[in-house]
Image 1 (tube, rainbow, N blue to C red):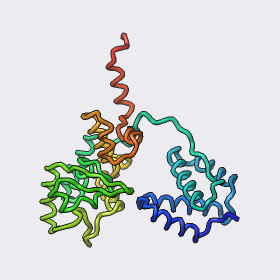
Image 2 (tube, helix red, strand yellow; image 1 turned 90 degrees about the vertical axis):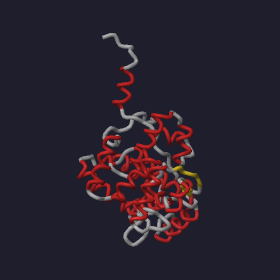
Image 3 (cartoon, helix red, strand yellow; image 1 turned 120 degrees about the horizontal axis):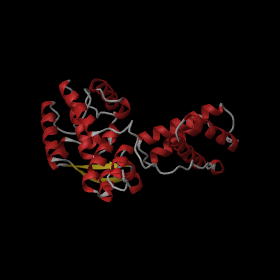
Image 4 (cartoon, rainbow, N blue to C red; image 1 turned 30 degrees about the horizontal axis):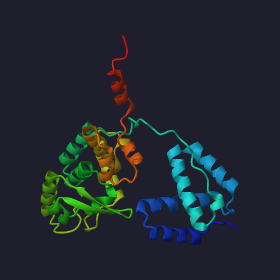
Length: 279
């Protein structure tokens, strides 16, 4: 009998920890497995039921979202040695244009900074600049410490990989001054009132409040979009996708290509400049 129990899910969670999965990945996998288990309602796992679940997901969510759930379930099935239940991801043509509704522009980024500064939210003001000027992940902010500012580079340890991230000199000067004002003598620069490193939820909440005050769409304002803005800006100047992949910590250039996509309007203007229309 193949039945998903709390005990099995607990063992799966411990397995993900030993595999050194990122916290966000771990939480998502467990959430997806629990959602599937709830959908089953105590029934045994069956290949047809899994396919029915997949069909329901397809009716409600995007292809990317459905594939992420399939990935989580397949990992769970492999852990349980239920390989006969593994299902195929949905094939989709690689997206070549970014969504204009979700693409944060440099002008909007600067508006967010001005608003944060005018509201006296220095921590958020500097945090956004840290992500956007270095390209680090929000989960990597804890590696921006008082000690790293002296070296002007951070040693990032993420997903079992280590890499160095060079920090702009001017950014280090601003963060040093901020740390001194906040009496932070060592450890992470961005911390809560209790001294703990800021987590994703703290930052997400602060940015959502800021976007309403700055008049920028909420769909565009989240920490990872600052990383995308860094990638697009870097690539537009350097045109070196291999170096950019190293900076971002990507193991595949295909992932980096997603970060460098421009929206359709940019491509349309480029095509119009080819001069191949006789008007």
